[in-house]
Amino acid sequence: MTRTPATSATATPDTTDTATPGDTASPRLTALSHGGGCGCKIAPDILAKLMRNALPSGPFPQLMVGTRTADDAAVYRLNDDQALIATTDFFMPIVDDPYDFGRIAATNALSDVYAMGGRPIMALALVGMPLKTLPHDTIAAILAGGASVCQAAGIPIAGGHSIDSVEPIYGLAVMGLAHPDQIKRNDQARAGDALILSKPLGVGVLSAALKKNRLDAAGYQALIDSTTRLNTPGTQLAALPAVHALTDVTGFGLLGHTLEMCRGAGLRAKIDYAALPWLAAAPALVREGIQTGASARNWHACQANIALDAGLPPEAQALLTDPQTSGGLLIACHPDAADAILALLRAEGFPHTARIGRMQAGEPGIQVS
Figure (cartoon, one colour):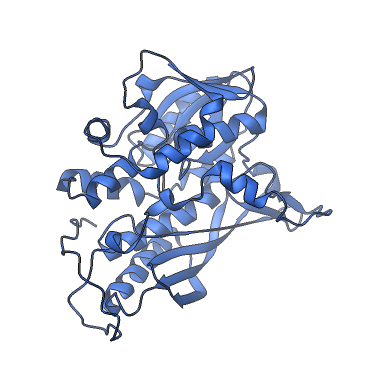
């Protein structure tokens, strides 16, 4: 579905009357939130400190994947043939078009199930909306956008929860299924594995440009095309023994999520900067000074484990830590299978898929050259 960026001017919120269906004056969604998309995430170093003593301890033998490796979703073994995948994701608007915002948020939430190698079966909607600020038809369009993605994925939105909040928030809790033997964790990469990325980078940069009215129609369409493409190949990749580890690249940027993979496996990643795929105009926009605050937070969290070659362009650091919303799958696979996996992803509608590096023995960290 082709849509164009919302262009309504920012309005002063009305704090006296509740907006009603049919209202036409609506503020820009991105003007109502302090951050957008997965750029809203708490930085990984701060999150680790917050959760250090917040999680229950004890034996849970059926819990196959929990919080230990910062994986994409929790996995609970139901029986010898089925494992339940459970995840949740929600955030503030990354775009102004309400329908597109709903689509992006739902696609992003479903991605965690695909990134574990599973198949979604059901979702619950998580809704927080400023009812005195946003017209009700705008809120309805957000929900409709999310529902359209779930319909495309072949699953119902079977319920959920809603609150009246200061900022607009939308997302899903998603359940999925997989065979226990085909769960793809983020910590099982092997030395020598090829690294493949299925979507182009630069979502945070383009969303920042949109907020500053610096993104043209072509850039917006590239943003929407990428962030609303479901990572359905994850289910197929789960059946391939040559795929050793899988995750999706979201709010911590390429470096942050690759570093999680490295730490889990006790390996070092080598990334070829020239091989990285970018959304239209993202590098040029960074050179013009457009980036998100989350990029700096991401760099602060991971810089001790990152080595950037001196020959990289000056915008490299900001791009490598750019927070991705509904980003691509990062795949660690046997190098002999890389070409077949690239072909599979391109055949499934991921034309920007690229082999971006490899895993190797060494202290956990990343070398970018």
